[in-house]
Image (cartoon, rainbow, N blue to C red; front, side, top):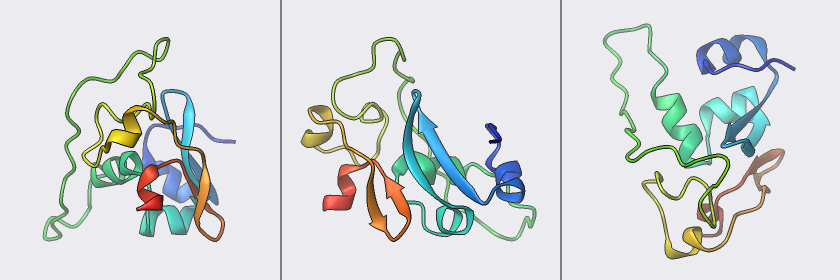
Amino acid sequence: MFIAHDLAVVEHISHRVAVMYLGRIVEHATKQDLFLRPQHPYTQALLAAVPVPNPRLKRQKTLLQGDVPSPVRPPPGCAFHTRCPHVMPRCKQEAPTLREGAPGHLAACHLLDA
């Protein structure tokens, strides 16, 4: 197990990656699948923040709004809903469970049902 906050390093060390938000796994997949097809909005935002070595390549940044909630008192429903750009009413009431959005690729997000 290797724990890091730098996904650029994780990409070179890991075979499988678990992304956590407020102490809970929100996505778990092979390195290749996670980096090519992230399913959770938090993972997408993290990957958008990784610097690209080629200055000619432009990447759309995902700037998360709001403050990180307290891990001691997380909000009801999905803990990420206070910062998620795709928040739906269901997110504020029901915590999503990890489920397979693609074979071997787990994510905890109600967008998988949409």
